[in-house]
Image 1 (spheres, helix red, strand yellow):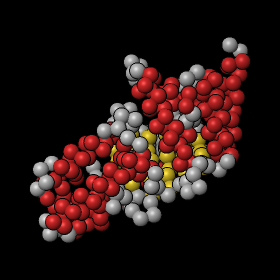
Image 2 (cartoon, helix red, strand yellow; image 1 turned 90 degrees about the vertical axis):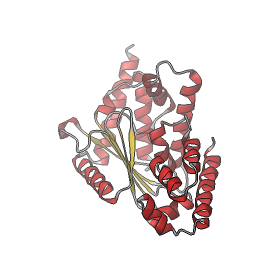
Image 3 (spheres, helix red, strand yellow; image 1 turned 120 degrees about the horizontal axis):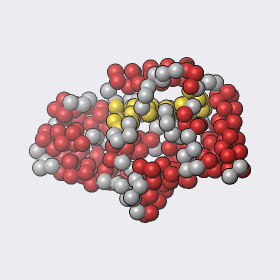
Image 4 (cartoon, one colour; image 1 turned 60 degrees about the vertical axis):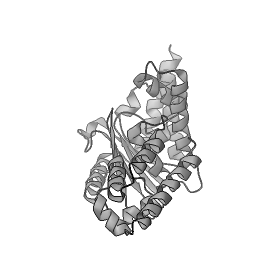
Length: 276
C-alpha cells in the first residue's frame, strides 16, 4: 500500500471513529476515559495524527459496541510487509516528526543507510527470503530516507556506537560506501552525528532508541531489540528515554571528532578492498 493511500486509509479510520463516537453521544474525553487514554489522544486518532495501538483499537470497539470493526481496520492497515509489524507505527510517525533523535549500538541508522548496506542486513536476518521481499524492504528503507532531503525535513540527530564503524556489513566495499555516505550527510548538515567510542565504556542504553517530537502532538519514543519494538508515549517513560539519550550524547565524541573517526574507518575498509 503506497504511503498516500495508507494515510487516506488512516483518515478513514479516524472519520469512522468520530462518526461512531458521535452517534453514540460520547465526547472525546468520555471515550478516552473508557479506553484509558486522554480525550486529546482520541482527537488525534480522529484526525489521523496518531495511530492507536491494537489494544486501544480493541477497547474502542468494546466501548462503542462496534463488533470489532476498529480492530479489523487496524489489522488491515498495519499489514504492510515492507516493515516489521512492531515498526509500522514508528514509520508513520517518522513522517510527521519535526525532530528525530536516533541511537544505534550496532548498525547505521535506517535513515542513513545505503541500499547495499540495507540489502546485507535484510539478507542476514532473512537468509531464505525471496528476492522480491528483500527488494521491498530495501526500497521501503530507501524511501524513508528521502525525508532528510525534503525542504521540510526534520531536525535529525544520530548517535552510533563505534562498533558500527568497525563491522564490515556487506563486505569492506559496501561498508566503506555506507560510512562515506554517512560522512557526506553529516558534512551537508542533514544530520548532526556523534560516535560513542569504545573508551566511553558501558552505554546508557543497550538497545536502539528513537525520540520523536511533533508540532501538534506530545513526543514519543521508540525502542527496538532484534525481534521486537515498542512505541512509547507515556510522558514519564518518554522523559526517562530522553534522559538516557542525553547521557549518550554527553559521553559521545564531538561531531567534528566523530566525522574524523567515520572517515578514518571508511579509509580502513577501502584499504582492505585494495589489498584483496
